[in-house]
Amino acid sequence: MLKHFVIFTFEDNFFKEEHFNEYVDAFSRIKEEYPKIKEISIHKNCIDRPANMDLMIEMVLEDESVLSEYLNSPEHIRMGKKYNPHVANRVSFDYYI
Image (cartoon, rainbow, N blue to C red; front, side, top):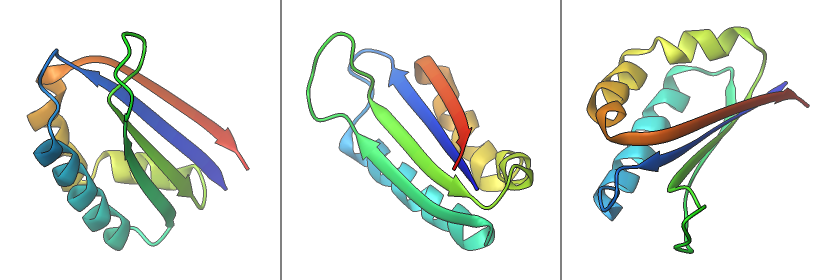
């Protein structure tokens, strides 16, 4: 099993509740499409501090192969096209569990 995290900071004053909701909906669809994705949690930051990031996606994947599959999924690509222009910083982290 693989734990996959992605954490984003968006442009100042960009990230709103409607964007968070779209991430939740999009990743629910992605989870339905890929049975090897065991868990997905989407979290928004609740404390406004300069060093804090805005959004965290936390996933448990059956194995490493599903990572490349989901990264190339139409829904993931659609979200990237929409939101990547507004990303100020992104951090990804993976580890085996």
